Image (cartoon, rainbow, N blue to C red; front, top):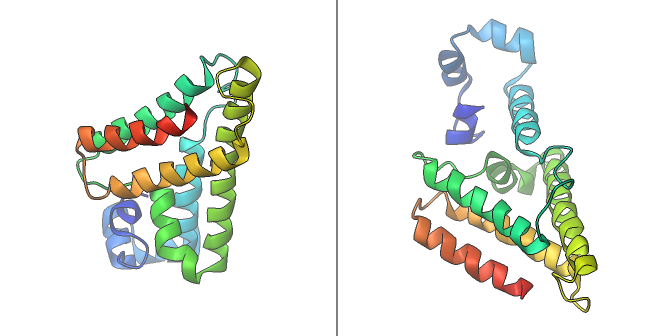
Length: 176
């Protein structure tokens, strides 16, 4: 996963993958069948490691503070990433979805999961008075997802906490 994450699918050769994993080419093909299948397995693992836990909604603070914490966590990850890799999932969407239907479908599903997470939080916020009832929470969930993805693309170019936190502050201002 690490080599694909750093270099992308197209820029990573089978030879580099084998060297990185310390295996022979035959072992890679025997285990995964193809470079593409290995990439899909790596992406699936990344997504499983990065989805919210099942009990995520059980002990939340306010909707706004929880959304702010999600964004703050992404900033922390980005600042700590010395290689400025961004998000493996977002990188995949940008690189492969435009010309590969399977990756486009994976991107759509992943985007929907983010939108649903934000939608659920915003709906909780409306019920508790944290989010004004007249706000269109579907549009807000879409906006927050777009902003999250944009933040992770920006993280490929900067690890500057002040820049990233400024983007998050502006993003979260739409919830007021």
